[in-house]
Amino acid sequence: MKYFLLPILAFLLVTPTIGQRTIEDTLEKFNKKSVPYISVDALQLEEDIIILDTREKEEFNVSHLKNAIWVGYKNFEIDAFPIQDKNQKIVVYCSIGVRSETIGEKLAAEGYTHVQNLYGGIFRWVAQDYPVYDNANQQTNKVHIFSKYWGKLLTKGKKVLH
Image (tube, rainbow, N blue to C red; front, side, top):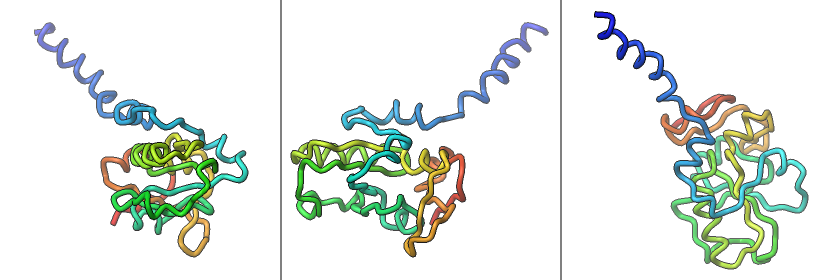
């Protein structure tokens, strides 16, 4: 009887760690590291940099980094990209850094030489207590989570999904 309980006990001890995901684990799984990362702390120190929000418009409308320019993801068109200086420092971001890597790859393929991907995206930004702003340029604690699946990675802020 006690040998029957050993596998059950082992399963119960291991199960809580199986379902726990982190931003680091998720980026390791989904990203190719094709666009160099920049940390949220390093971005805070940067000057003369363009920040591009690569999430969908409804996500951007809930909150975004100060002075971020919305370029989107599904409808991103390189031909309509507003920045002409291909040597300009550019940081792309999304929820955690998966979609932004794709947009960063497109920019690099077009000859943009200083493109970086914000490691952990807006979720990491908020987790480290940096401010985000709504469409009225008012600071907010709301963050659009894209989906319930991705929302599990947001550890601070008020989750919004619509």
